[in-house]
Length: 283
Image: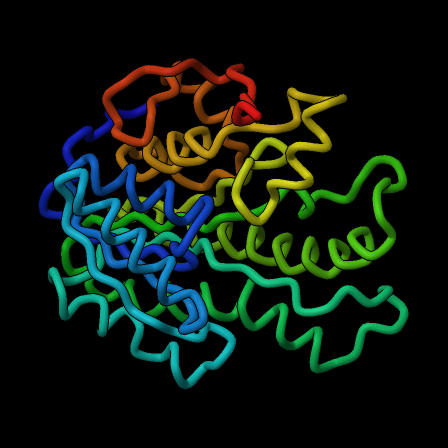
């Protein structure tokens, strides 16, 4: 399965959408292993972005933050270069930011809404990858991780749940499916260069702040569908610290395949394994 490089000192990571949830968890986990981390989110998430940096620094890590609207191709065109101004060239890129721009039925969703969703969920990751690749090629080492979604896979049966959410996930899933396909093509292109490219998704639902209500509801009847944020952070760490490439894979599958234990965000304390369920907070 390849050697996992537990010490990421000397590497610089850029993680988008890192003001909370999956992005924050991955940022903190990489920093715990020595990576210098630059976190990014839109201006409206400034306060939470600062919280992410503070949590990293409290853990002894290095962190900096950048405001960037990934829906705007102009404001994102120098994001990687701006990130490099803090700790050096970016050689770890985690494309986590994503958006649902409309909750309209598939038959009526308009062109601006379609553009907006694909702009953040597909075009922005591709742009940032293309910005980061020259430095990765020069170093002969790089890690590109695209955060995907279980919704990228067409459901075998009709989706259940609120109609508004079902409609929203159609186009969101389509944008993530496109990102998955791009991931596989890029991994094939870069095979043998020292740059790995993978896509990682929660098994079903990661218990992030944005999914808290859904997670709590689902956990009552299907607890195995919900996973702690540490699961995504662990899967991301394994794919970044190791040499696996060309995978579109779920977090639990990464741990099962590599027999990696589930660690806390500090990267030290073992709290479970691939099958560890989500434990809702008391009260």
